[in-house]
Image (tube, rainbow, N blue to C red; front, side):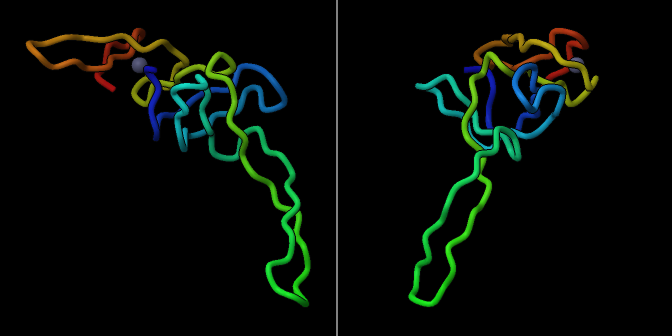
Length: 101
Ligand SMILES: [Zn+2]
């Protein structure tokens, strides 16, 4: 998994297509990511106490990595992540502008 928490992605399919947002969580096993404000689903919340009202809230659901593209924070372009290895260190780099990301 090249993407990680805090990265910005561009949504390339689905109802949020064209939007950009930050990754809140990456689910490595499922090859999915949870993106802030993207793929919202309505969820009914039952009242916790007596006398309280139930609520309908929107929660972000994980979406497939294949529906997103990494957005480079340096050149602001949708790109792929490459790696640069220097000694025993590995850096992620933008394939477009070659900046370390
Ligand atoms: Zn770049």
